Image 1 (cartoon, helix red, strand yellow):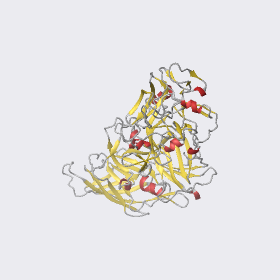
Image 2: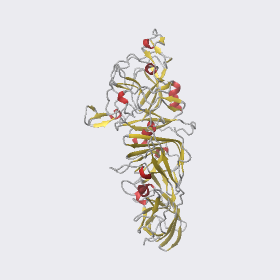
Image 3: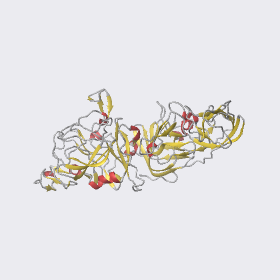
Image 4: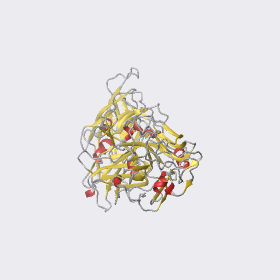
Amino acid sequence: MKMMKKNVLFPVACFLMAAPLLTSCHDDVDSSTAENTTIHTYSLVADGTSSLQQEPATRALSEDAAHKIKSEWGEQDEILTYVVGGDDLHTANYSYITNKNLGGKSRFDGDIDSKKPLTTNSEIAFLYPGKAAQGDKRTITPVVENNDRSSLYHETSDKTQKLVELNLSKQDGTAKTIGERFDFQWTKQKPKKVEGKKVDVSLGKLKRIVTIWGLRFTNESNQPLTNIDSIYISNVKSSDIFNLDAGTFVENNFDDERTNLVIKPEQGQTLSSANGKYTYAAFIPGTYTDVVVMVFAKNKVYQRTYSSITFNEGIIYRSDLLKMEEPKQKAFVEVQGVKWATGNFIHYGPVNGGYWGIAPTQWWISKRAMYIDSHRNETSSGGTLVSSQFANSPKQTTDDVDLFRFGDIEYALNLSTDKFKSGKNLNIEQKFYEGDGPLRKETSDRSKAKNGDIVWYHTMNNHRQYRYPTETDILSLYNDANVQPAYCYTDKGTLVYGAYYTTNKGGSVSRINAFPTGVRAYDKYKNVTALVRANIGLFLPISGLRILGNNHMGFRDMTWGSGAYGQYMSSKATGLVQSQRLQVGPTKWTISNGEKAQASAIRPVLVYDDGQEDPVYPAFANIK
């Protein structure tokens, strides 16, 4: 993990420029009538000063030939207007003022609705850019609090509200688009004068409530990256709820927040760092940890990670991310002091000569990509390509296994048997047994092992050696770690949902635990593909289980009304035929005792790493 050097970021001084005087008048509605039936409409008029070329100013953004950000009021620029304290006025659309001129002088005209008569003690909020609150691709959306959840959460409203969602999660990397849709700026002012049907308002300074990051990239040979298809920035806030009245973001609303930002150019185009060009991203300011920038260019992936980085409100930063390298799978990811493998334990390929060991990625599940028909049943070709999380009872086959019975080594690929290691008060971590039953003794001779720790059995002679997780390991995830609903894109473009764990350093008070989510609540899951690829955090897929003597994968279907879940074994036997497991999913968050004959997932823990890599199984060569 690379620390950010002090010379990486170049803050550009940001003085938000004073906007001009607004002169306005309300319409012919009789202000003497009852307040609950009176709507006052004010025609706001603003004469602007000449547009300045400093960066950044409070106007539409563009980049000049020298890659400087300049700003000027654009023709038809709009500012959203809202009467503070008017949350009882729920209309279909917000009010706007619009720029009628281009460059030099600017004149804004528009209407603003108010349920109560305005006075010099009234306050009007202004949010730029107003066009971002309109149309199908709007990035400003009115919201109201949803009381159906135990945690604070907001949902979309079809009427104007004082609370709006600001969504910066999908951008195209250009300053122009940021200026049109993401350069959020706010102010609140009182009318200077109210005389009859005329109201004067001075707009004053608008406060930019986002930060902007300009990025340039070079490859491992320090050559500028070109033909960039997409950029992912993870662990910066790209969506949150903003209070128009107060000019602040809502706090303690974790479920509303998005922490992933995707930059993709317009279809048919690519991004480039050649000739000094920058790619720009706007997001919500803050101090962030484990920020990952991942660049996809020319069928390669480049990564840079910042352990901690601060972005302040209203500032444009510039960074040159030099000599970026392609990320490689590491031996472990550490969460709560436990060194977890970067994939579940699996078998892949033929029974004889196939692969036994750690999956090539954390998101790996058996049948990560399969075709289903209109009834969601598996089909050999055609249909819809999905992961096995969206199929109807898919069958597990011996060439692609990710579920195993407790303590079974000898018959692990016999998917229809119910063999396991019986016995209670047992801990099979790094242990072998000559067979099942009380007369079958423990052995250190691998060649005699029939039961025991299958992970240790297949990795003990590797450069990277792993074991079953213990009760302590599993409980650290259940009791201590932060956990969030998350998903990853596979190499085939399908989705795998699961639980994403990170170290909680603040104790129970600050712990994040967003499970259970409820069924089909896909909006609660965040994209951690880039984080997982960067070896940050632990991702446990919702992998389901196989019941006794059955090769069908059950409880894996994310569309199932009763809820899918991942079931992860520890090395502890809690009874003669029961063992301990962690269960996590849309309706599950528990430590339970289950049947040993149920085949469950295993996420191993690292025992030893000599610093060398084990040979890559040929089928995994291009899986990242």
